[in-house]
Amino acid sequence: MVVVIRNILLVIYAIVCLAVIILATIQNRDENGASGTIVGSSTNNFYEQNKGRTKEGRLKRYTIISGSLFVILGIVLSILFVM
Image (cartoon, rainbow, N blue to C red; front, top):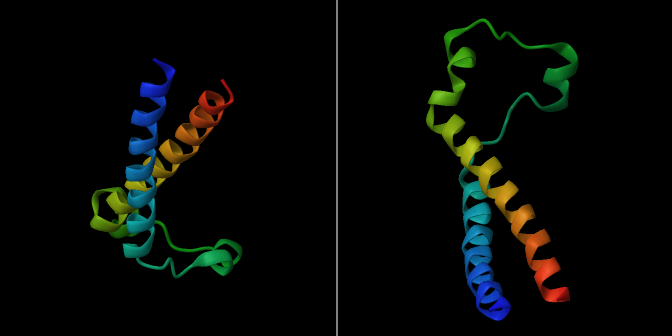
């Protein structure tokens, strides 16, 4: 039973790995970086307030979700391989 679950999770893990790679490579580079944090940036414009609804916002959200799944599946798989 553990072997079947382990193999299914390995396939899901491989798919999530590919998703993280693809999502990370198709994102636009954030221009502000550390200097934008120090100097500050204008967050009162319409684009900054609705950034989550744009294509870039969705890509960022999907990357965070798939990265979290990557970490969680990695921990679960490491526990299953110890058993």
